[in-house]
Structures are given as C-alpha cells and as structure tokens.
Length: 138
Image (cartoon, rainbow, N blue to C red; front, side, top):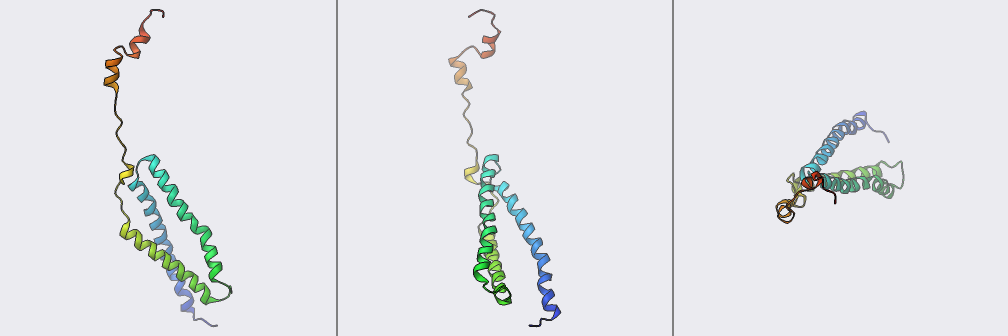
C-alpha cells in the first residue's frame, strides 16, 4: 500500500509536541504530590503509591498491544493500539483536571504535640542539670 510523503510525516509532526506535553504534565504531577502532602513521611507514601500506578503501565501496555495486534504488519491494528493509548491519556487528563487539587490534604496536617514540661516541673522540682551538678555521693 502506498502512502504519500505528507501522510507519513504528519504523525511525526505530532510526536514532538506530544512528548513535550507528556514531560510537562509529569513534572506538574510530581510537584503536585509535594503540594498536597508537604510533610516528609506523607509525601513519600503518596509518591510511592502514585509511582506504583504509573509504572504499572510498563507491563500493561505490551500486554494490551499484544492482545490488540495479531498481525504485526497490520497498520489498522497498530492504529487501534495508538487510539486506545490516546483515549486513556485523554480520559486520565480530564479526570485529573476536574478532580485534581493543590490544597494540603487534611490527613497531612500534623497534630501538635502536647508539651508536658510544666507538669514535669511540678512533679520533679529539680531538673536533671541540678542533679548532675551535685557532688554528693549517692
């Protein structure tokens, strides 16, 4: 089957902006993890969860392509693979744009620790420093 030169170059012209947008969106999503969970322990857990989902595409994509493509030289079957990838990308982008937020989440807020130093001073009138400075043998 013959394809004119402009039909072969057209997808390549879309490839570069696509890679640029994917890279920009990835950087934005990684920065968003720090926005919603700035505490060190929480941001690490959120990042691990997000990376697990993100990296699952590494083994799901070849399985999906193998399921959709039965003849490797069929352009129509490969077109379906890229259409499925485009639909998944657009759907996840739309969901992220609608429900995504950069507000600090309620589960990330640290609960202030209660300082019991006043109570300890009432119970133990001498501080440890005073006890260590005494020269009396025990």
